[in-house]
Image 1: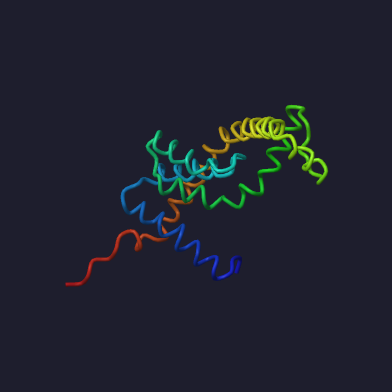
Image 2: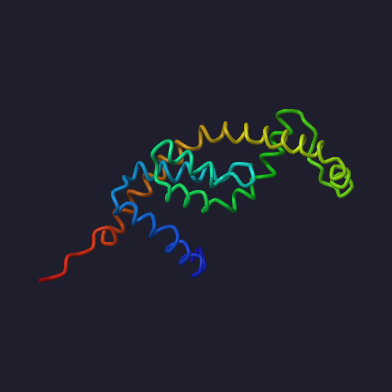
Length: 169
């Protein structure tokens, strides 16, 4: 088995069942796929603390499912942490800015200059967000295509969960 029992149960309860409920509620696989893709791509952006707000605004703007977008965002939360530094480093490399302070001495020096620290953090964030946005433009439609295909397979496999059987009279 690929996943331990607790992980499978968590995914079943917090991802699979809510998605199936949305499908049963009339959300099309296409719209659901775009909602999930938007949430997943926004969920890996290199900003801190803005993902939920951005997903709510964008899902509302495009008429997508709020629930599915939030599920997508929270499913990729560990990837957000994993990709944060690589996005920053890519911004440093592509925009030829100062490297991130990684030594204790560098961090202590910046902590004594809060205005400079804020300016540099914003510069790193801005460059990382530009790189993420370029990737998001390509990644979102591709992800939506593959998620739609997966949702259709999921629909076929779990049809009995979607449409409960009628009780025998």
